[in-house]
Length: 274
Image (cartoon, rainbow, N blue to C red):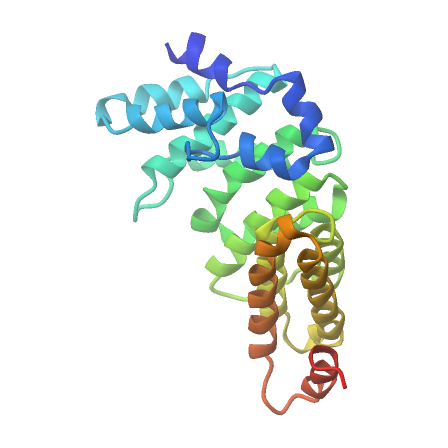
């Protein structure tokens, strides 16, 4: 049932893969969502929901785990299995952490590092999988992996998924992680001007907050970029609802700056021009 029905139905179609390049936001919403909702009901989300229902009976957990992680050399099949395994992890996660062997995670991390050689649709699904694992198991590796993908890939769907992993991993890190923040932020802001994906601005906010004094020279450019995104969203009725996310990130960035920091004077001129 799982191998011959559920997994095949969860595979991406050629049309899905084409859409990942022509309409990245819609691709993410319809093909990397793990629950049916009033606005989103596809064969993919339905198979993910079905996996969630099966997992309500503990007797099937071990068998399902083995079926989903069975070896495969077909990239489309592999992506479908990773998609369903992500749902498995979301449905079984507990205070004990993700229900998966660390060795398997390590192997998949190494595969995800092949960001320039594997197809973007596969890297994106692997990154979404990692967002359900690494923030809880090893957030520092999550930060490093996401940063690598953002800097090495020009794929919009890859960078959107990587921004989600990066933000989630930063939040869970107990110590500050050394990241190429000044290289990541401009790329994410450029991405945000093209794709209205909420986690991008949230990721920028998280990066600013861990950047310390070294990031201060870039704060003005970041705030200016976020304001430009707000203006761009307001000009488009369909995107106007995204303004609140960008504004929240902007306020959180400013709020993290010490009251006596000289940069606040410059920011006031940007936010409240004469």
